[in-house]
Length: 304
Image (cartoon, rainbow, N blue to C red; front, side):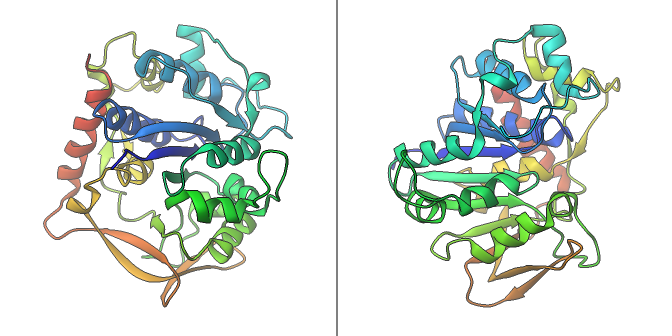
């Protein structure tokens, strides 16, 4: 069986766990388990695509297409770890040289073999909602929904909190309409798997980058925080870890059912016949164990 193609959509200039999740994908590709196929950015930091491109070129030694929300002007604020990559390594691309994220995703799906793509969003779900809403065009006559149904093996999203339903999780709260649209309109033929706020909360990762060589761009981003023990909950690394072919060593799926979102962004899971699930740790799997799993994979990304 050929390795899956992974599209990663994330607010990569925001919380650092998105970058840890990207490093997990680098480690899995170096191990020959996946191929990183494209990256979309769900925030508008000017420095985000630069940091992603610097990391990809240094670690994977190739180029990967990057998509941005092209109808918005980028945010030039330097108050992001992503700018630390630019400060140390410069830039070979800019926001204005990236592709529109929805057009990029449509192209990547159109040119992929059927049922070969794992789609991940670990940020606001704006880009995935707009992909679902997209209509046929000169790239391919299929709508976004039809493309996903034809090309995607599974969709993984870090979103919501199914354990504490009063909690309004950030990724959902940022664009409640988009999140609701995705959960209400995602094709039933494609499994939708949720990593919620609560399960990865106490799996703290990131300080492994202190061991990385100085030419590894993500280390510069990690150092930006100024704490040699800096680490974050593993929300986005859990999402990217679900691309591992043996993910079920660590996680079990709860479902099927349906995620419901209220007007303020609270999430609730109701069991039923929709093809939606959320994850739990398997019995005996601890947060410390998962921290070691993630750090071992990340460490492969900076091993020659």
